[in-house]
Structures are given as structure tokens and as C-alpha cells.
Image 1: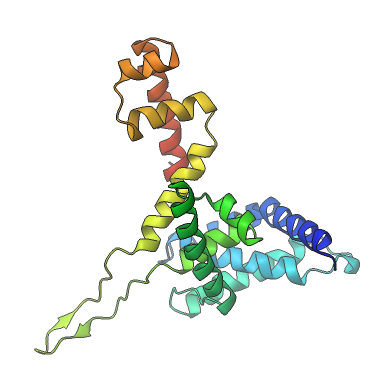
Image 2: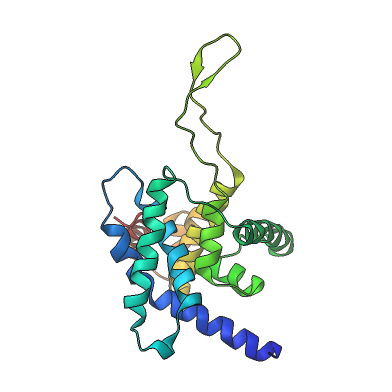
Length: 229
């Protein structure tokens, strides 16, 4: 397959996966409140969706959702059998390393954190796979107390990792990228450049009162997008 055709196929595959993420939410929602965080259920479901996408044969006459739901549920149920940990494939681990390397190059080149979409385009994969790789690279919390040298039992609590910070930065950049250009400039002036509302109003040729009202609405929207609340 030629490079342009391969790129087109990857794009179609990514779009197909994105368009069917509702199946993952629907399946993961069945297991809420059973002792595993929803984001872990969702991550396992996404792995199932990717497997279903790659294994689906339209010539059999099945609807994709009919084929995909059992595969997605299978990955989620496997999560419970494995004690709440998602087994990370070698491919996903390798993608995580590539993401970190590309992030460093982008930071050196532009001084800004790349978005998930930018990373996906650069690494020729889907935003969902990038998000999964970042999630998979986060350290797991061990719920088994370890025994120290003096015989005491201690909980193995990991310290904050740079990957967690990266995930937060990427989430923020994604939300920022969806703002209208003037709203994005308002937020950058206020919270990155340290400008007052009056100074921001002068740059945007409006009033302090209008800036205050607009800022409040933008922050409410951003908070909802970042937290899902």
C-alpha cells in the first residue's frame, strides 16, 4: 500500500474509532460503582473498541455495534479478573516513549505543550491511542502493604510523575484549542501573561466589565470540559 493510501486508511480508522466511542461509554457505564474507577473502565473499553475495529468483517453482514459490544465488555470484565489493572501492550508502551520524545522536541522547538491531536498527527495514530498511551504510562497505586526493614507494614504510594503532569497539560491545551481566538487570547493574557482585566480590556479594545463577564463564562465552560461536571 502506498504512503498516501496508508495515511488515508489510518485517518478512516481513527475517525471510525472516534465515532464509536459512545459504545465504550455505554458499556463502561454498566460497571459504575463496582470498585474500579470509571476512567479505568473506559480505558479498558477503548482497548476493546480498537480490537473490535481491527477484527470487524463487514462482509459477514453484522452491525458493527453487535460485534463490538461483546469485545468491549470482554476487556472490561478482564479488568476485574486482573484485579483492576489494565495490561499494557508493548505497542502502547512504545507509543508512550514516542509521545514523551515528541513532547520534548515540541517544547524545545515552540516552548508549548503539544495537544493530543498534534501528537496523534505527528506520530500517525489516533488521538484516542495517544490518550490511552499517556494513561497507561501513569504509575499504578499498589494496594498491598509492603514490609519495611524494621518489620512495619507500609503502603506503597507513588510520588507524582511527569506523565501525570503531561496528561494535565495536554487536557488543558486541548480545551484551550477549542476556544474562539479572542477568548483564547483573553485567557492567555489573564492567566499566562499576568495581565489585569483592565489591561486585557485595552488589548482587546473593550471594557473591564465585559472582560469580567466573558472571563467568568469561559472559565465555567473550561472547568466543565476538564472535569466533566
